[in-house]
Length: 415
Image 1 (cartoon, rainbow, N blue to C red):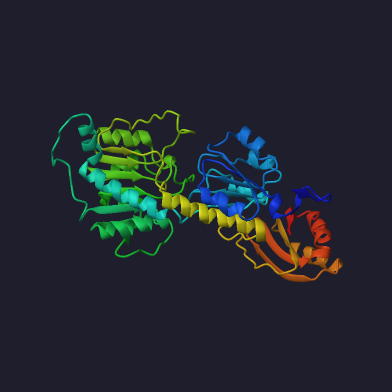
Image 2: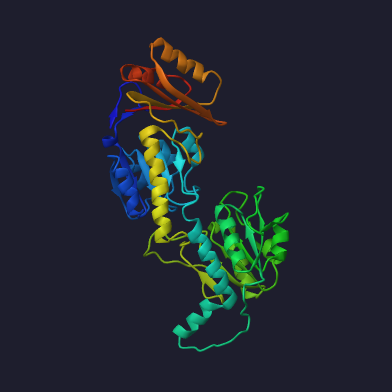
């Protein structure tokens, strides 16, 4: 990387000088996508601690992670050359996205790519719970023959309650309806129902009506322990709970108590409040050993198809941001995507969203007798993001002047 002598936050980068760090064993096609752009890519199998990540990010421009690597404010403050972060999963709560925004770092994720994989797992687990197949399989492995129909049911005609009717929740509803289930859902945002799926007015109404409850919500302050003792008491006696969203959404102790008392007949859990860092680490939960409880190691999106799709979706988003400044799909940035103008340098500017910034920038352009080939600005409550194509001979001087504005957060040139 070459850094100009006018401002440490202003970078003039060519593809061959872009350094990429991938953690947590990302799909091989991701490396291929970015390497094909001429980027230098290093891949590691595991997550890194905060201090190790800070050290490893020196000189790195692009970071790709899954769900275990925590990109904290401290990490961002010390990653002076980091330009963007890709979360190769649905969630982004492992990244301090507000701090990233104020450092001029867009964060990308894959909100669609593993939808089908998670939805299929939910349908499979509903059937497994209804027939107690996990326990029957375990019995036979232990040499026990327990052929019984007690507490075994068809799912046809049963009611599925979906909490969180987004990309995954709505897909689960479609598949469940095809299996003959009645589907109701609750979401804090009005969502168009798919097929004969039906919205209900509040969470407790859903819990009282559903035979199976599956959770598909993000981890926020509002969803922490969304399902605890009061909520479980509202669930039908003999019903089932499935969670493939985030571990903090369910109070595990409350769920354990409900299973032991047989208020709930079963549960399927794919995510946990605390998860091991690596494959060889041990794992303990109160749910181990309980009857008709399916425990899986956060594999909702762990299919070859989903991982390949995630690799393409996030990898292409990262490449498009680096090469042309596109922020389409970023979770913490204004959405911009402007075609490149031939024979120009592209200036990318992130600034505080206060009155007069565009006036000041255009004055700089005018003072340098620069011709703007194309320009686009978008803002949100805190920042503005500007893409501007200028002639080669003035781009460096204009970029230097923009970077000195008091409102500047980050400015760089794409050559």
